[in-house]
Image 1 (spheres, rainbow, N blue to C red):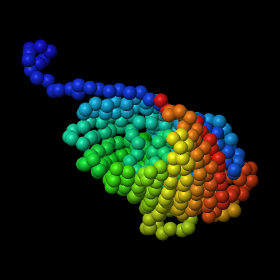
Image 2: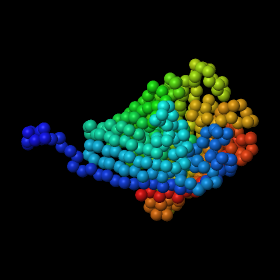
Image 3: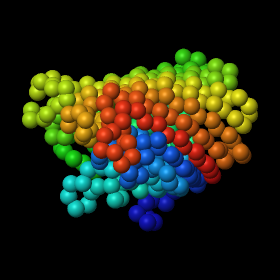
Image 4: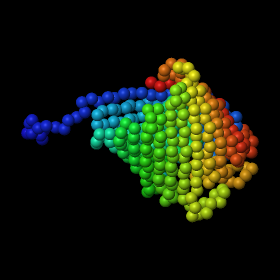
Length: 371
């Protein structure tokens, strides 16, 4: 016997090739909000950050910077990445703080910390902190057709913590099942959990149709449901992307809603976005977007109190944007965008005035570097 094993015994075959790569991304920006928010946050009376990026007004800052390590092998994979930036600060501000060792102080620094094992052909189990399975736009600005993310993306989860099962049934079909702590939270806020699925089907080499959902227990045994469908297609030099999301949640008995909602009813929110991006030259592209988001009961968009209307003003907004990207080099892109919103109540900032505005807009320019 040698080391507890019989001499000559066969040990399980290990992966013969393990590939580890390192990379990163930096997105620096300057933005001007026409509402001139007095505290430089693009919010109103302590209300919502209506977009996670750009999060600050009249300020040179870093939207997102991260460094990461990726592991790839035949039967295992993983990624670990650390991040910082104003979009990180705004997106993780709602991370629950219950107990002494929870909350955003640590969570916001971890973009992903996930490991996975392949247990059958095309089938993986991954566990840890990972990107969300919902939506059609990602967390990293450089991966999206527009510089800023749509309202439907900003008001659905960007990250999750838990376990996911992914199965690639055919080259056209991929399915995923997630068991997670809840609606975009690493630290727990109750004893419930969330479960969701995603199905991507490639109808052609240039077109993919997606369905995704999540069912979770939020804010003390209040069931929340969320469903979305989306599509992405490339036609020549044109990229088209769009999705429609619908969410519902049971309301607490004592809650005061606007407009009033019966305690046994479900509050509903919904939104859509449609994006087109055309490549004008090998280095220049133009991106356009229209969108709508409707959350009258403020389940996910908490606007704060508008002085000229009732408390907890509803959010029923439209938006549009126009952007231009210039690839200075393959890894360096200068991105600029003008974007505007209109809402049915005065929820947007209006400088130092106590009266808000129904409309708002901003211009942002950013330099992104990937390595």
